[in-house]
Amino acid sequence: MIELNDLLVTILDTVEMSQALSIGLFLLFLNKKKKNSLLFLSFFLIVSGLSSLAEIFETVNEYVKNPYMELLPFGFFPLLPSLLYVYLGEISIIKNKNTNYYILIPGLLEFVINAIIYFLPLELKRSITESAPYILFEFAAILFGLVIIVLTFRKVRKHSKLLRDQYSSIERRELNWLLIAITSVIIYFILSIIIEIFFTDFINELLGSLFGISLVYWTSYHGLLQQSSDNLITEKIIDSKPVYNNVDNSCSQAEKEQEKYKQVLEKVDALLCTETLYLNPELTIVHISERIDEHPRLVSSAINKLSQQNFNSYINKYRVEKAKTMLLAGKTSQLNIEGVGLEAGFKSNSAFYTAFKKFQKITPLQFLQNSES
Image: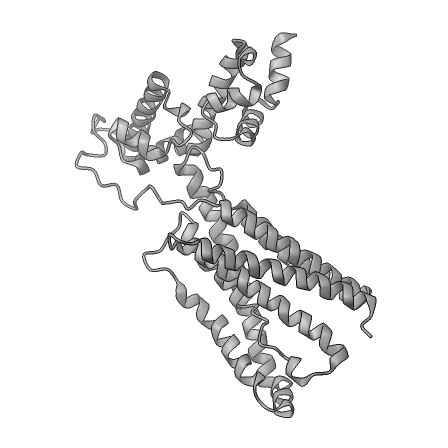
């Protein structure tokens, strides 16, 4: 008879598997527009569900002793991070002309090899999986998966930097949720090793099941809401006009560059003050550059170097000043504080509160209370 501990873990693993498979298949069905990002997110969830199936069979097989339930080829460790990396390539601002689908090959190869081994006679299967070459092969697969996790982490960080240089609103475009997921996986593996040493197997299995369920929901929720981002700045400045127009030729190269940046930033400030473009929550650096007839990269460099801010912070500072003016003018009698933030150009309440506290060191409510005292 199955023990209560094993029954609880099996139930949780079944919940994880059923949820991952059902959500993955639902997203696959939902993908009518054939968006590759949604496609690879659904593949990730489906494969994640199948890996849970292997854990269920492993637990059950401790009681039924069925040789066909041994060594199921559904580990999928190198394939799971690879699918996540390809998904990242579809939604990130850092896109290659040719998506790196080849990165899926090692994970698929590992599955094919294990599937072939699975159908071999039991004794031969066991001898192969216990051999040094196979252990080395599995170690290489794990190492490959870890490398992909590191590459994913680095790409997300780079995505975040480029995003803030080009978009004034980054809600649903940022990938902090993915960083949290990756960090959680790393912490979980470290904890599982410690628990394996100092605690019972049940505690480790229970932690793994609960973590797996949480990760499925976390990835599904944020992945479904995630917006794809395009790189709005080309690599080279393509402009028929000289870059240093109206700059004294007797100046040094550095002085010319600094003077050009100053000219560009003055034009940006003048445009924002006269036409209040920052009230548009979808404002991008392209909108600004087109209005002042300068290349987006030049506008971005001028903002970064002279204001010591990225484009996102630069625009949000204007929005915070607008919100302060509205709060002092008593706009809260017509709108609540959140409404003031939306009127000032912020796309969400959380973005408003975060930016306001960043520049004012207090919340909008505290600012309002201080102004009334």
